[in-house]
Image (cartoon, rainbow, N blue to C red; front, side, top):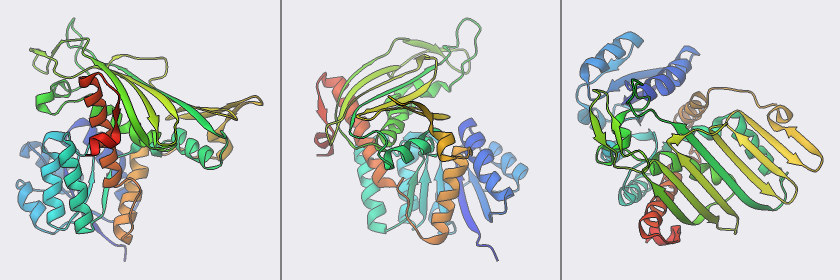
Length: 353
């Protein structure tokens, strides 16, 4: 008889949680025969109950009691970062494993405490690192493992996305709370958490120098009310790694490059040009499509990571994308924010203390 995994899912009524995690991954796994018992929780009980009824899941109006009940094998959170740390702590204290969206917390102290708590409790932990499960970055990992670049010198990263302001008759295409620090919005933890785990394919980041700016100071919310933006919408970061590799990262919510998510890695034998959907090796011998060369089969990246999480929970194994990795993301983001504020180079080690 197949082993059943009991999931407590919080914050999956929102677009990201519902489309990418619930529909794209969890329900897909259940339809494929994986035994999953689902219980939904969230801020709006009406929305939670309606969604639970639609998909054949349970629902709860008392998340606190559910977290303390010890009735679940895994707690997953895709809600606001403002409440995430306290919910994760409740789950860990009850002895329940945790998988969560990033960032683990907007506070470096909370991130450190959660890592220490999970280590003390010896519980399974995982954080979303979806980009690593795309065909482009799977191929890049393989290329790096096979040392196709030789000695690596430099890394260039860029992300750009045009986010509508809500003015001039164009509806917003990102929730307004994302642009309000007081509501948990952030550019740095949101985007640079991704960059940290991606760059760790090559090496761990040692120090940063950052420039941030808010170009669009007013936006409209879901009710067409104008509000003041309280986070940066552009960040440029120069970094070095523990082995001396140099690099740059530019991330923006006010522009969109030709390819919105790119990473280039330069070495003595050639260069990798990586996006989520492709990985090209460029060398004096020409250009090679590594996705095809390695035979990497496309699969939804959220589905792939959820499968690994469920397998690990069922078998009692760990995963590399755990809270130790989540803490390094938080330290990296804290170093960027401190550098931008102090206008100085900041060692990630300095942030740890």
